[in-house]
Amino acid sequence: MSRDTLSDLLRAVRLRGAVFYYVSNWDDWAAEAPPAREIAAAVLPGAEHVMEFHLVARGSGWAAVSGLPPVRLETGDIVMFPHGDAHVISSAPGLAPQRIGAEWVFATRHLPKPMPIAFHHGVREPGSPLPVEEADTVLVCGFLGCDLRPFNPLITALPRLLHLPAARAGGWITRVIDQAARESEERGPGAEAVLERLAEMMFVDTARRYLDSLPEDATGWLAGLRDRYVGHALALLHESPAHPWSMDELSHAVGLSRSALHERFLQFLAQPPMHYLTQWRIQVGSRLLRESNRTVAAIAQEVGYESEAAFSRAFKRLVGLPPATWRRSVAAGE
Image (cartoon, rainbow, N blue to C red; front, top):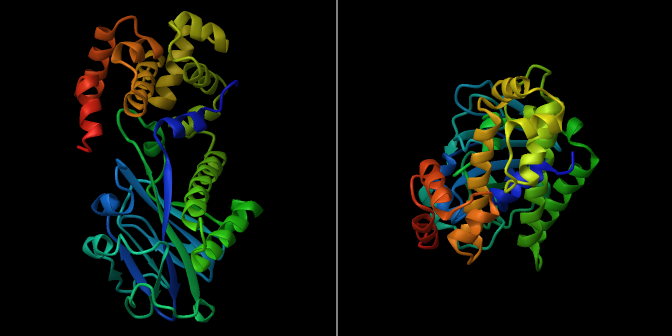
């Protein structure tokens, strides 16, 4: 495989991170976070999709999301909510949580980050200088943002609650959590930038380890990466989206018949290879529209369309707007 397809996708969907809260907990405690969509504009302005995560720097607790059994958390664990669900983090299952309202998140968004918070039968004032050495559990909490449209197959491939125990996280993640806790507590120059990069690294490693843990019969985009033939085909399409691919050429390149490759794409991705290629081309094109001053005609050629009109038709079919209109709406923050 000549291309790191996961990294390629993460660049295209503009993954970015932010660490917002350094949370100390005493005795019985429980906090309920709102759905990420309600606070996205406060925590990661401009992000189309927001996910919350928690790093357990010390102690233990539980994570729960509606409809799923609670998950035990230990020191060094990571828990993430890829679909942006409301969730509860607590010292024990079943405790009545103190809800963190979206209004509070917006009201405190301009305070220096990461913001120290203390939980002890309720929320203490943000910025409280209580010594964390006394806390039973210390969490580093933050957010990850990315684009969903036009095309992001990774998010749907992840579960609603993604738990990475310390035993499976590896030694370097433990050091990341320690560094995140240190940066959060000391808040020295550059701490915010360091924490952003740490959050992004943590997400990538968590996604990779989730991929490694998938059962043999798993389907979805991540499972497709692991498949010998689908993974090879995805790497080729990502590496050269402008190439005039045909099913004959793609199937020959991966060493499988046309019909067999078609069936494997349907099995893992629920769509044929050429449909995937169209979506990937439009995703790459949308990033170029957003981040460059190139003309629509130039971008059309760069992502494999012979004419601006053909690119515009495909873009509007997938996104709902012509490329030039979509570019203006993004620039206006709509």
